[in-house]
Image (cartoon, one colour):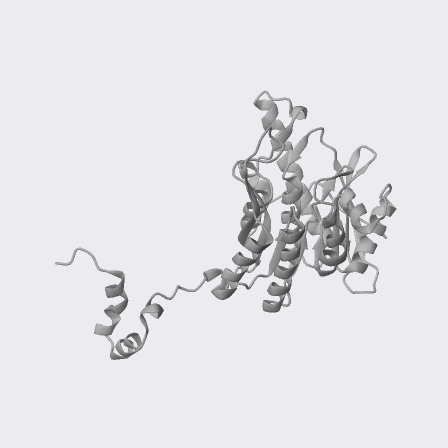
Length: 342
């Protein structure tokens, strides 16, 4: 009595039942017997989409892909992450260890996907990129993905700095401005990054709106300046140019400025904007309401949990409570409403 059956015997079993199967099997080469099964995210795609996310990664904590992949999966997306860096923890700790992916290594990963016909994506999402070679390689990825799916949506968070401080090489600013912005579908800079990309100072609401117009003229149809410091509050300004040459629909959302510093919030915000704007493609204001409401609920939970643990939240950067906030990601209660500009 056979105690087990080898994989090869299992594959050949139908030959005993049907002559048709028999002749089909014996005409296969040995290699074809090992052909991989179909990729179900391609054969039976999610109604929401399939995302390639190129961002940083930390073993502990939530920044980059750790902030983006889980929320997008909760919203129904298939997500394939490529980690631009892999660190033990975020760089706000006293020390960190890890590796940085270079442009050649990114190209190798993309080549592997391409050789196996796995390069069909509905969305590309990019976040922190730390070198010129890697950013140039990302541009090649955009071109390659669009050669497979011309309708690819490229959501770019141009992570360059914050509060007047640049934390990437200065050479990256020109590449973002001249090469990346023109091929992006949606752009999600903060105030400082929007100023870098436009050369335009943002000191009032009208400046934020004008910065969006300048960015539309360069390429992306959707622009969300995710945080503008304004009179003790944070202001989000969103802009959707539905047709080239037409005035965009613009809106603002006012958010409270929480007296603490959180890591990974920009990465999470961009992921949520991707997730909800794809569900409401003609209503960027509604997508932003849902994204902001999710994020604010998560931040309030994070703050409360640190206080509960006896920690002074203002003393250092805080790790966000992502898993504990999954209900707020799936089903946010909209507490922050968009106000449309007329």
